[in-house]
Amino acid sequence: MIFTRPNILVLLTDQQRFDTIQALGSSFAAKTPHMDSLVREGVSFENAFCTAPVCSPSRSTLLTGLYPSQAGIPGNLDSTVGPLSTSMVTVGKRMRATGYQTVYHGKWHLGGRIEDHGFDISEECSHDETTRMLAARFWKDRDWETHDCPFFHIVSFLNPHDHYFYDPQTRVPGFKRPWNNTDCGTRGMPASVAAKQADWPEERWGAYFRYYEQLIERVDGNIGETLHQFRCSGFFANSWIIFASDHGDMAGQHDIPFKGPLMFDGVTRVPLVIVPPQTRFTGPILVGADQNPPPLGRRSQLCSLVDVVPTILDLAGIPASTELSGKSLLPAVRNAQAEAPHEYVYSEWKNPGIRMIRSRDWKYVLHASGEEELYDLGKDAAELNNLAASADSAAMKARLASALRDHLRSTGDGFGL
Image (cartoon, rainbow, N blue to C red; front, side):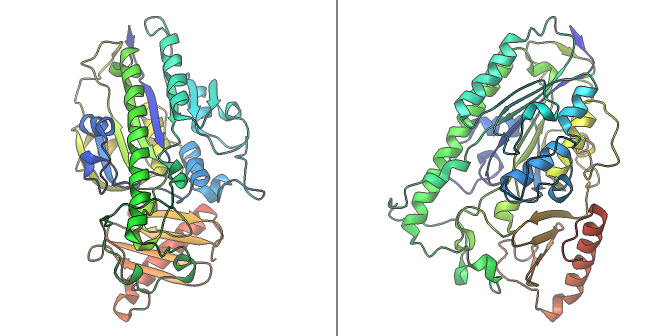
């Protein structure tokens, strides 16, 4: 059978740092052969950032293509936030309206019912082994030789999020974190950020690291079995795969564990890999799939998870929507020298309110308290020197603050205005 539009499979993990994949240069000892295979077969965006350093708001972006404040999910679900409104035009609704069968399996974390957001088949599940089996069952039950429409499928894994359950009494003798924590982290750190710091011995950080690494390997194994089932169901030759995580983890940088009210790259920078159809495998033929295949490898263009929905729509041949906040990454997938979709990327935190703007070389963070952060990332990639009070950096701070205000106005975000 010849298909004119591809299937699209989105694989998500939760709380996975950008530097946890061996093929991309990992800071961790975890082995990641299956994520490595995605990197080898695809295009990896090395400067991809989430729109919020916690689950629900970031996932609202992945579903709507909007910033969390626009999607009405400015923070994790609680009595004041969520569920995601059924009036929101999600990627599921857009894809279903154009003839795709839409499927969602795994962690949701947006409240309400998944099926109300445009998914024909769905099951919420935070048990990763069950999630991959649900996905595999869908593929095995779907006869690709006779089915007359493509599918859009999100498979959302929980891990490595569950490292909150590491044993704090465990010690790893001789352990040393792989980054500099001079003076307990950043000089000039805002009070709300400093409050997240933990005074732990290195041996306890070792226990944290080892458990996080175990969960990275566990989710990598589930991704590997998922890819095996997907390939053996006959869909590799007619499917694009997008792999990403909703946000990262501090993992002891600046003496901070987990995530929190902060905007360091450890929590805002995420893995993002786009894999084209693998036409050497058995399966239905995608018209034009092997014509001008994209150059595989790494991309340095600055991008955001707000660009994932426009990319999915572009893959499906759906015209760009002007109400979406992001841009398709396909130009950069097809041409390593393509212009970056953004000069700046942005991230949000609800309470206490924080907003971030980041370019390739600079980052500015504004706190509701009035405190500010400014980092020259070209000279200080570890974000150890807050230059917000530096007279030498005043012009750059003013420039970034102005651009941030413009972004807040354009998105209807009333923070600080």
